[in-house]
Picture 1 (cartoon, rainbow, N blue to C red):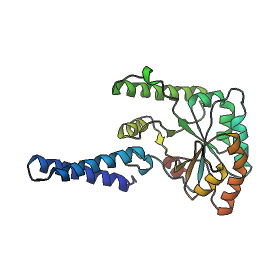
Picture 2 (picture 1 turned 60 degrees about the vertical axis):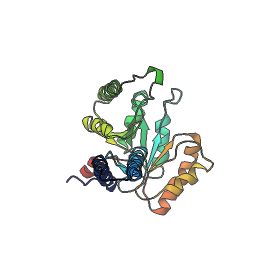
Picture 3 (picture 1 turned 135 degrees about the horizontal axis):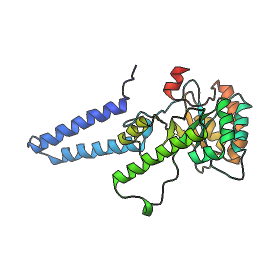
Picture 4 (picture 1 turned 120 degrees about the horizontal axis):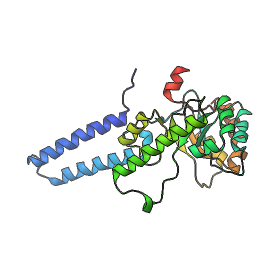
Length: 263
């Protein structure tokens, strides 16, 4: 059964209808003060901006924002040619505490560490694909259509590459897409059978607090925590997973809603 749109989307629908009514009333001279109309327009634009900046609200997309049956730690894995065993070592840390990870990586990284990635999937971990780094602004096409064509080409290339290098494994549908989570992005996700994902708490980047403290404070039932793979994170991971066990929060691999229903 198809679920109803989230409250944020209904709010957007109501706000759009209200903005249209105000615009019509202003054009017909029913509103004497333009200050009210200006305030309504500013409020509407602010609502749209919030929806675009906070994809976890799901105002314009159906992104996955909560994990199923536990919490999820999504680890961004960078391609390091000098460390072929990085995925295997990372997954071993999770498995030592009866936990499973979700590996966020580009298709290039997946191919570079194909053997380790295949073994991780067989042991219950999952994969969420991320976009390649966007080209420099001066190299990007200025037109919206050309940018969309380039993105479609990238998605088609990723799908072909996965089928070539992992012919016996279904292509992952979880997708951390770059940019704004707009209705256009939703249509692309639907076309390529991908599930948009948004972290409940994005813990990447520098911070004054230790990584273990940051993760433990945000760890709650259903949370999707996104972190960067680093020596400091690996050193803190046993403490984090032990804390999750004490709290009774299992750390599991992230799966889409369809996969969860099939299981």
